[in-house]
Amino acid sequence: MRKYSGTSGQGLIISSPAALKYLRPELSEVEIVDVLSDLKHRIFPRPFERLNPLRGRDGLVGVEIGVCGGEHALSLHRILTPARLYCIDPYSLYGEYDEGKNHYGVDQAPLHVAEISARELLADYAGQTVWIRKTSADAAKDINEPLDFVYVDGNHAEQFVREDIRNYWPLVKRGGVLGGHDFYNGFQSEHDGVIAAAMSFAIENKLSLKVELPDWWIVKP
Ligand SMILES: C[S@@+](CC[C@H](N)C(=O)[O-])C[C@H]1O[C@@H](n2cnc3c(N)ncnc32)[C@H](O)[C@@H]1O
Image: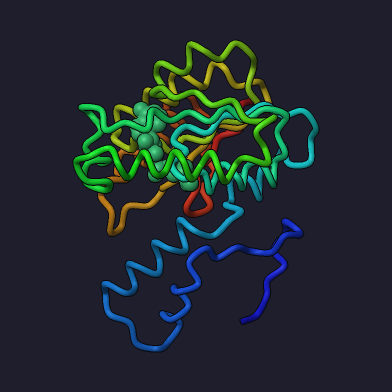
């Protein structure tokens, strides 16, 4: 397999090498959806950190909302090297988390396993990681310092993404970046809310919305 150097100096990481079996001429619709999903979720670094205007600055303070197994939090640590990364996730199938019930089933076990995996994966960055095991709405009250970046990837229902933007935008410094994952909905209408919330916030506040799939972001003027 050809090795790509990317821009990170660490090469691209395809965490599911099995996806390479799809690199052949004829694919079924299910296979196409599967491989595209893998590319959108499993290639790190994602555009948010790769193209981030703050990349290379010292002492950044950031947030990831929705950490799950920690793969993207690890990428944020590696590429943006924050002094502090707040990792926010309730790891709970709370009542309004319908999308979670679709993905993880009806019991807590998969989220419990994800939490253990994330702690292990981020162990090398324990000194730069602040875990907040709460929903993003509750966690916002625990953050008492200005933020350089916020990555939104928790509950993707429109009212939750709107709430995340509304709660965290005031915490972001001028020149800071708020964005998130899953700005696509061609075959996954559960991401409709991400697009609607990000676009309406940008339009209502006359802000420039940047999109490089699968991420979106807004730099605070
Ligand atoms: C798609 S996964 C996150 C994946 C992770 N950002 C990555 O790319 O590696 C969504 C996560 O959001 C969490 N979550 C759901 N509702 C949340 C909320 N209200 N606040 C914070 N996190 C939430 C879930 O527990 C789940 O672990």
